[in-house]
Amino acid sequence: MALRPNPTLRQRRLGTELRRMREQADLGGSQLARMLGISPGQMTQMETAKIGVSPERLRTVASACNCANGPLIDALARVAAERGKGWWEEYRGILTTDFLEVAELEAHATRLTFCNTTYMPGLFQTSAYAAAVFARIFPPLSPQEVDTRTAFRIRRQEIVRSGSTPVRAFIHEAALRMQFGGPTVLVNQLGALLGDSERPGISVRAVPFAVDTFPGAGENLCFAEGSVPELDTIEMDVSQGALFFDSPADLAKHRAIFSRLDSTALSGEESREFIRSIMKEMEAANA
Image (cartoon, rainbow, N blue to C red; front, side, top):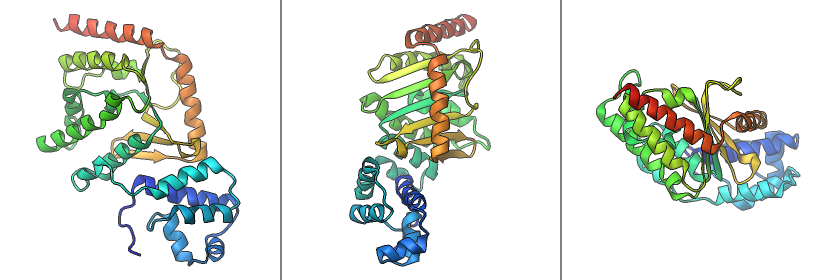
């Protein structure tokens, strides 16, 4: 069996969950391999997603590890059975892998929650705003690279427009005021954000400077909920790209962070009024 040169995010997560299952059973890789009748090398390749695992083999592993979490096993079996490719694969070799993995994560999530302190969540950005965000990268991108990244980001927004996946966004006032592309671009972006906030399945919550505390760190985050809680994933935007976290400790920490945000952010209607006030302020300042 040929080894996968570039396992996808979902394939790697499946391997990670197999390893966690084995470790929770206090089994070594060689020990579990003997129980399954495979080589230790094959066991390692399964856990690193270098080779695939069938739903039947996955259930055999779960049984050998005495895993009794039926919903998790069923969810992992569905991942193991996946064979199709997503639309983002068209961009493989054109964009860096982290772009593709963010789209893959969003496409399979059952709910998305964003926390943004620097710029608008990508799923709500207008074309002009997104292009301005990419244009500020250093060293500068070529116009063609900016256009490609912008087009990819806009295509990702189909998940919002379709209403198939519930989306929550906690957006700090700093992100609401940051002028990527200038005041006109920002005013149009805020207007588009207001429109999105009225869509079914979308919640936009503002966090003003006046809030006494801002829970969590200052990174731009996405919490993507899986089909079961064990398959939730955190994605963090950094200057080098995207980082992904899925350890139980990280997931518990960020669930608590978003719970605190939910209790401190403005309500949906209060947030719309707050965003409108910023728009009016920007329009008056640049009249």
